[in-house]
Image (cartoon, rainbow over the protein chains, first blue to last red):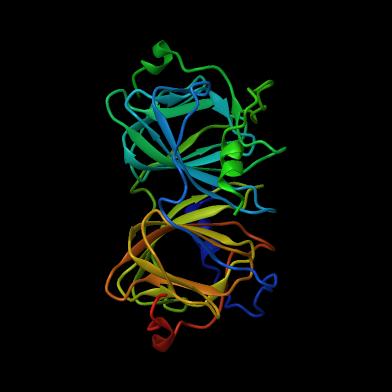
Length: 162
Length: 162
């Protein structure tokens, strides 16, 4: 992460705008209403337990950013995986867990933000007895935004958070 | 927006991972706990009314993506502005409004997602009597992620949503 002051500077540049950026002719704002994008189930190949994926957005090229809300029922978690361009998680409900390969299990709660750098092997999911929802936002590198690896075993999942 | 099925494909590629993407040595997941990033006030130069900005993330280079939660008290709104690389809004609470220059005012509610293409002049804010919070995610182009323009006048804000 860049320091937050820099992030704020990025969000709110001090200079007032001079020339307006030209919009492509006919470019339109698009409101995608809640309820218009069907929920999907997290495939058993990549997730343990019940996981629901609610699509949010996929920005048009040249952006490769895409986002979804992901809800893990108690005990559910992703397989181990990496993100070629990294990933941001923003926890919105419940209590969850994340772990980097070789690191301690960490508890995550609403408002927590998780940055996983490109290529770092990790998993995320719910606490054993509490569901968790996060927004997940990732960009692509080489046309991919995730590389799936092996499942998180019950023994691995049973590790106590630090 | 790309079609949602494509978005889902992007989130969940069918192919199982072959080689794991190499992580830079020492790369670490980073959990930024809720409450560790101070709230900021939306500057009066760029906003009308009371606006609070809660920073969420600023992804490291080569990404230029940054995100914040923005809360508009009733009647508060941004100035007219454009985003050089576009912007995604995800409404998380309350009832708000968005308008593209020359278009109708639209009402937005929790779960709604708004895509504003690069260079499209627009504003967003709360409803006159109801607050609104959205996550805002934008990338940069040419080192900028926003170009600020004139304030939204009371007369402009008073337009009835379609």
